[in-house]
Length: 320
Ligand code: MEV
Image (cartoon, rainbow, N blue to C red; front, side, top):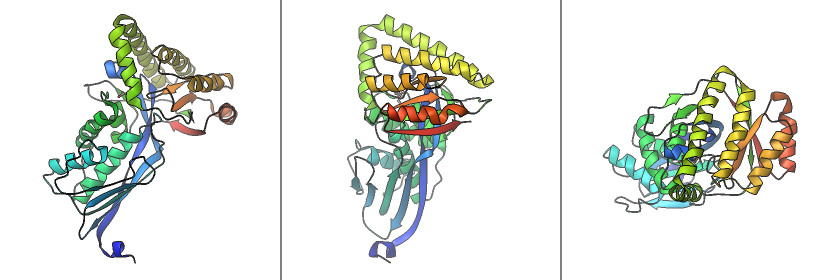
């Protein structure tokens, strides 16, 4: 037993999933509804322990922000880790526990799969457990949303919502969450360009476009809104051919918003040419991941072609 292990008073673990946005990214920031699903196989996991004395150390080997040590009366609330911890301490009117939170993550950062919100969610659950509470999803969601503002500037709230509740949702800013009704499960391949792309940059550029060319960009948002509504209906009745076509249309509109990239376009085109019903970028864009709706019989062929076309990794998820 190590000295650290001898000092442990209690320990446990918490986790949170990644996410993909099926329809409506970027426009969702401007009040358009959007559809997102959790990626329950791709998770952030945290192990925590309370020790007899010392600071609270948050250790994240897989992330850029490798390690921070939080003391009582910490002041650096612009650090995302510190911000989620501080909000939960304030909520329970508690002081910072001694111990550690060790984070491991399967979710690549800056890739459109919700790494930032998943890390905040998992840390939030851990710190509440350390204080002896099982925090409600409603409370945790509002705290993670505050941290999303550090990551994104003007987040819509979709990432934290789909990740905290871990449910397929139709989300509209400042509206109650609607569960997504899915009659027929479907397969999505997620192909990573391997290019990290911070969401706040793409969101900032769309904001500039909107401010300089409001009428045109509003027309694009209106088109995205009608796609999201048609997709909700098509998913509800299991019309996957229609869902695929709507994905292709969505990708074109996201190109017009300047948030695609050459690498994303190549992967989208490759997926469609090799048998996907539809494909589009997912999340903030510019890099990160694209998603393709693929019939069961075409999964291996599409995956193979995506890897040959430069995808750094391809994951399969079934939306149900
Ligand atoms: C990022 O996953 C989704 C965006 O629409 C930003 C947001 O909704 O906050 C690009």
